[in-house]
Length: 121
Image 1 (cartoon, rainbow, N blue to C red):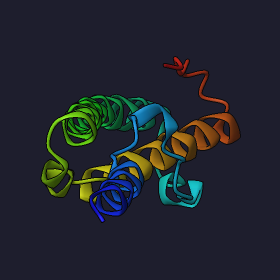
Image 2: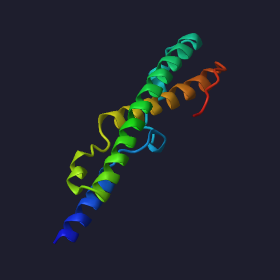
Image 3: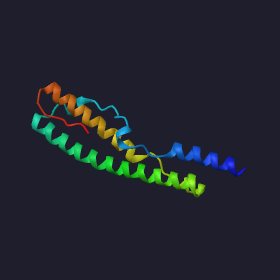
Image 4: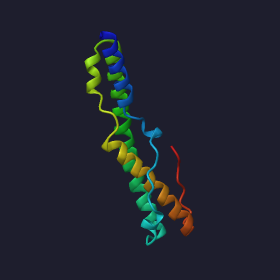
C-alpha cells in the first residue's frame, strides 16, 4: 500500500511541475493589433513587452525551480510534500501571451519595414 501511495504521489508530482519559461509556447496574437502604430511606437512597445516578458520568465523559472526542489523532497524524503507543488498557472499564461505579443510585434515590424532588430533569448 505504501508503495502504491508513493507511486501515485510521484506521478502527480511530475505532472504538476511548472515548466521553464523557454519551454512555454507562444500564444497567437494578431499583428493587426499593432497596425496603426508608427515605427517608433512599435519600437517602444517592443521594448515594453520585452521587459515585461523577461520579468514574467524569471518568475516562471523560479516557480519551476521551486517545483523541482519540492519534487525531489517529495520523492526522496516526504511524499506529502508533493501537494506543495503548484505547477503552471497564471504566470505561464502570461509568458505565453507575451511571447505571442513579441511575435506579433516582429511581424508588424516586417510588414511596415521598420528595421527594428529583435534579439532572441
